[in-house]
Amino acid sequence: MSQSDKPSAPVLFVSHGGGPLPLLGDPGHQQMVDCFAELKAALPQPKAILVISAHWEAPVATVTRSAAPGLIYDYSGFPEAAYHLKYPAPGAPELADQVYDLLQTHGLEVQADEQRGFDHGLFVPLLMLYPDANIPCLQLSLLKNLDPQQHIALGQAIRSLREQNVMILGSGFTFHNLPEFFSAGSETAKQKNEAFENWLIDTLSNAELAEAEREQQLLNWEQAPHARYSHPREEHLLPLHVCFGCAGRAADKVFTMQVLGKQASCYLWQ
Image (cartoon, rainbow, N blue to C red; front, top):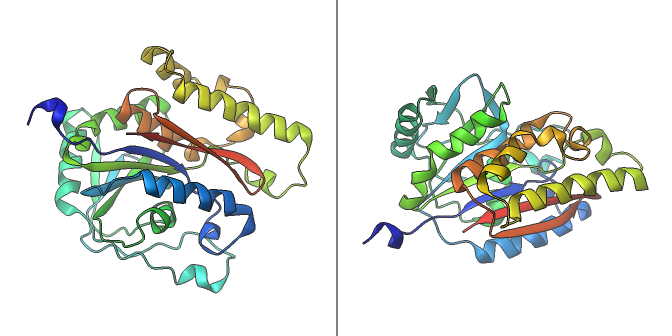
């Protein structure tokens, strides 16, 4: 099989919604549930899934190595059912070792975590996309420094995993100003939300952009319209930087939706 004929698993960034609410019938997440059903139909069955979740930061890049990870219910104040969700997917310790080696080879500091389970940035979207929980999964942390260049570099370092049919899933949110989800909303707020979304959609999907220019725009994301309104803190955006680093080009498909009254988006590289 030639290099060009090798199967290449997708890279996917999802806006994962408000905690477990997409799984609990919340009406503010109906568009997201519908969007994920469309996504599910478009996705192949990968050999494994490597998830970069907004809900795990570490001083250095850290990869989960447990063979049978439990779940971390890293949210509070939800109905009791939210704490009984199950996603018994196996871990992938051998793949974790490979991720460790790839990051080291690319000059990145890395650690392995033998104990950590799956946070809701993994199990909430995967319960919708791969509900059978029969695909080995593992997580790669964000970096506490929240440096966009270093997160793009993380994606570049793991790019070759796609050729082994390992899917890369970035799990965050393209809008993450929590107080604004609970505000009455206004036309000004709507315009700010949509201005940043429009910038992000164009940056990630405009095939006429040179890749160096696309990368530069993502590195300088704070200069985008109303960037800090949309992301007072950028941990929910940076999984998208990892995805771009892994894909290295414009997204093939963009999925837009309203989540809790705010516009959000997902990006697929096939």
